[in-house]
Image (cartoon, rainbow, N blue to C red; front, side, top):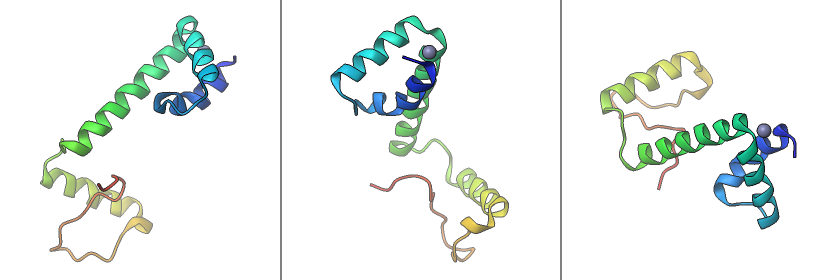
Length: 96
Ligand SMILES: [Zn+2]
């Protein structure tokens, strides 16, 4: 299995969203290939952080709002019609 194939499937692998055979092939590759194993580990950590961030927001409301404002300035097409005095919501975080 090539590294590029493994990288493509890493996300699905993390979700357990592959056939048993595929899972095993990727596992085997990860055992032999330090680079892909590193990639898998970083991805796992990022997903873990993201999950925890959703459950227990890590940024304070104030900081979150500042980041959102900066994002809105940088990417005007993301801007919504919210008024300034309304709380901003995080558009990129899934809502439960
Ligand atoms: Zn590899």
